[in-house]
Image (cartoon, rainbow, N blue to C red; front, side):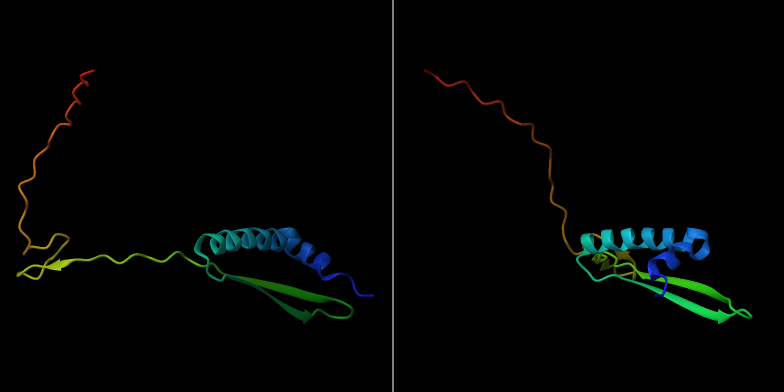
Length: 108
């Protein structure tokens, strides 16, 4: 019987491949949970002959971590072509600060 795949993966790169896969899995799971979007991890193993009775295994790990959506921003264009956040056609209201009133005591 062949040696279990997980045992071989644990030894790739002196254990660094396994550690990286573990970290990437945690990162993708956290992002999927937060964004509710699909994530993906793939591992590619390239196996080359290395003379009689041995092989060289090179690994490649790729992760697609879902990102939260970026919000849009509304800007208004001035007559000079500049972008501003406040509509230049809208008048300013003359707002002023009003202190909170203290409620009067009830008359019994």
